[in-house]
Amino acid sequence: MTDSKLARRLAEIDALQTEINSLRPLSKRALAELRGYFRVGLTYSSNALEGNSLTESETKVVIEEGITIGGKPLKDHFEAVGHAEAFDLLYDLSLQADIAEEDIQALHRLFYFRIDAANAGTYRRVNVIITGTGFVPPGAAQVGPMMREFGAGLPGLRKKTHPVEFAALIHLRLVTIHPFVDGNGRAARLLMNLALLQAGFPIAVIPPIVRSKYLDAIRKTEGPNAPPDVFVKFIADMVYESQKDYRRLLNALASEGES
Image (cartoon, rainbow, N blue to C red):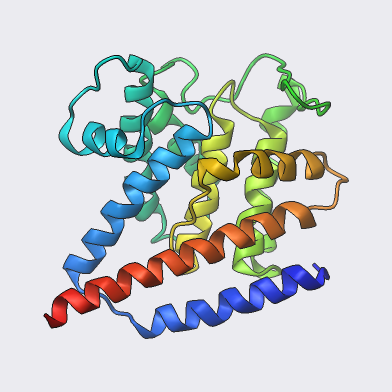
């Protein structure tokens, strides 16, 4: 990546990450508070990007108290509970040094099995089209080989890229392959965050308010030969904003401990 704006953003990210790292190690209570905060935040935002009608406060009630929200579709509740469980798996997988193809399938299976058990964690066996874009995903017969190649190439890609760039690129590659009948966006955001956690970064949230910019960045970089710079820069911006939120929370928790 040679884009100067991206290079500056990555430098800002590195500096802020150094500051965050200086505040570690965290207490068990602080870790639990932060994990709970981002568990709700990522679940809400990732589902909302796909049209889920639950608000952030409703998402919190559903996944932490097991209470259904009157007037809201059952599917929206299933998406919230499933995504929260997939989020928990992220922390187990983050202890690994690498990401395996099976990890991607496991994340998809967890958040999708209540909605469509037959296709949860299973590569699509049909061709699909994506509305609102001229991009046509690979045919069903290509998905398995492309995912195996993708998984095999992850360690090498990680070694030659900045951690945030790596996270953005694997997100983009997964949505480009579009391996599942549904839930590819959520699987890609989970995969991206797995890579970030493994590198010591906080969870990165893409707020629903920037949905149009997010989708536009994907459209501009879809396809095997399209330059990924626009999308990587967008994700870098989201990582930076999430880092600032993480730092704010760390400072708030530290202040509580001193009072």
